[in-house]
Amino acid sequence: RVKVMHVFIMAGTLQAVTVLLYLIVAGGYANLIRGLHPNKKAFYKVGVDFTCLDGSLAIPFSFVNDDYCDCTGDGSDEPGTAACERGRFFCQNKGHQSLELLSSRVNDGICDCCDGGDEYEKVGGVECPNTCEEMGHQAREEAHKHLQLRQEGYSKKQEYSREGKEKIEQSKERRAEAERELESLREELEVLKEAVNTAEGPEKQAKEEEQSQWEEAKEAKKQARRREEALNGFNELDTDSNGKVSVAELQARPELDDDGDGEVNEEEALEYLDQEAAVDFEAFYERVWDVVSDKCQFHQGQWLPTPVPSEEEEEDEEEEEEDDEEDLAQDDVLEYNNATRELIATADMARAAFKDVETKKKDLEREQSDLNKFLELRFGEDGEYASLHEKCFEMSDREYVYKLCLFHKVTQKGKSGGRETNLGTWGFWTGTSEDSFSVMKYDNGEKCWNGPSRSATITFKCGLEDQLVSASEPNRCEYAMEFTTPAACKQPHVSEWDATTHTEL
Figure 1: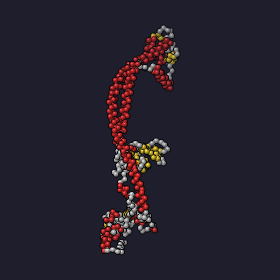
Figure 2 (figure 1 turned 45 degrees about the vertical axis):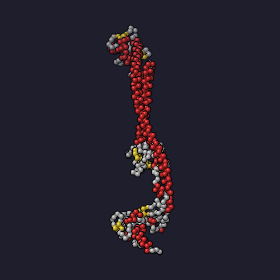
Figure 3 (figure 1 turned 90 degrees about the horizontal axis):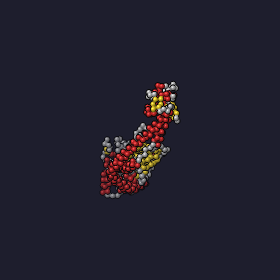
Figure 4 (figure 1 turned 120 degrees about the horizontal axis):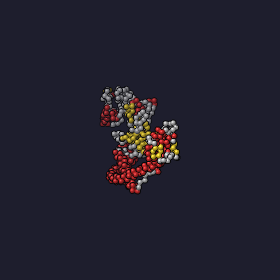
């Protein structure tokens, strides 16, 4: 297909013709090549064979845009037709934003370019009106609104930065102050510890002495009670009241039978009396009482055989013995004398003073640790994210309530109830090279069933309010969220404002 340019000269001079011819030759008709991107004009010159832009083939210039694909590698010989599947068609779209299409969309009956340039053959009678001015005006208005939002957000960001830097500075000052307080408390604790040691020495000695005396008295009381019980039992066995318990008197007690024949023979009686014919009370108390009382129980003036208890009865008996011991302990509680009580009170005061200061020290150490963790964090280029530290935000979808606590953790909870699931704890910033503070990573969340540990990525967008606006799970156990905040707003450049007033974007 031969391209011919008709030049009609209605009036003019030889000079005008010369200038026109110069412009045509210099431009090489590049301005007349349909679908050609302006940046590629230098490669298309009339009268000069065209070389495919990938260097694969050289063809006569007349083959350019002849609706036959010669440059099959890149389609560069057919920028204005649909002949090459790898070709590109450039829409000028004057008044709006220029656009580059796949060549397959040229003359396909669908209006892609707002100026209609891609449907020049009007396939199927399609008419593509030029809507570039209208679309451009609308786009510029939208761009202007977006820039206004960014500008307003940036103004708020400045306030965030001021608050953030103030918070960081206050944290640094508080950390230094806490360290000074800690040093003072450490010195005070040394003094108080010495006071505790000084007070506890006499206290311990006095308590030990009274404890020892109390235990001795308690043991004496116990032995007196045992001796009284033994004496009652001795008197009951001493039927002739001669001050001794004899073999014959024991033989009269069938409940002391050892071999189960219902009688106490002489041998059994001698065994009880430690092979003596008779014993007085002292010998009875020292050598006989324990053996006899194990065999029989002296109860309400009578000797009764000791029954063999069942397991349940043994447990009940143990509980009764424990109760008796508790009752005994309650009835016989050590009460320190006035001097010892004064020593205890002095030591208690010293311990209380030490504990009070020690508690303050531990609280300060925790505070100092929190301050160190806070100050180690990166809060943006100018401290703009510091004011959001550990503030929490929620959003809901059909199934879950998501909660983001910045620089802390991300959780998920079912709307129907149940416990929170940890989707990740604060990890690090993982933004782009252009904006390293645009994305947060939270990792090491709860482990999925037969899967990895949960993690969440938070992308920050410019907005006038701090708001968690979306949450999804694009991959199993990997969550993606979007958060709008003034802290993410960049100041618009002058050129961006200028672009909204030009007819071309």
